[in-house]
Length: 252
Image (cartoon, rainbow, N blue to C red; front, top):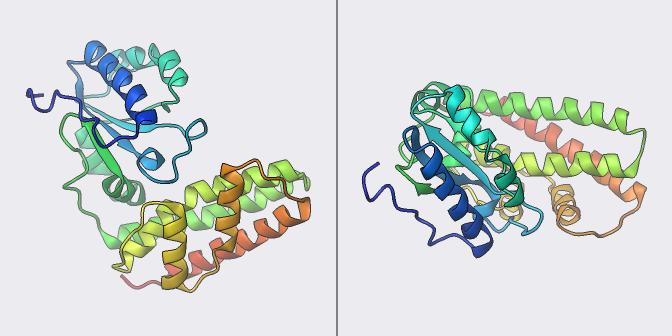
């Protein structure tokens, strides 16, 4: 890294994120400086969906090459990362990124839209994507979500807590798929869940009340009945099922 790239760029970050990231970045610079290319924040810590005390800080760490030595040094930082609510970083090399755009287009599209590179060169700014690959991945992921929802519901034995956990998990995972579908349609992609739900409802004529309600349960300790949670679960299932059918028929 040159001197400019070696500087920490923390200015746009909220204080609850900037403090932990500064500590983590300095440790990275000290321990894996020879292999380190960049440290980039992605996900909710950069949007209105961030909930201090609940949300983790997600990062992508780009290194020159994957090696046991780098993994050992990162493993030694596990206690530090846990204490600062920094999730295990997604470890990549430039070659891995280049060779994975066809299979992980949804994820990289989201990284490109919602990221802030704290240290080193931006690894996502110049990426480009094939719409056919993104459409296929989107269909596959949505249909896989339906399978997980069915299996989860059967395994829950109608226990409210377990059904709610499935709902929250689906809610947290759905935003990138919705943004990918909007991208396929050439529409603007909102960054937070509430806005992307509203935009998707408008563009695809789908019902997103289940997403709104599940998001509220995700962020609060609001109590709800088993019936309410179960009804919301099935509304969510219908929404995901419809999205899978829409993207299956989408011409790109």
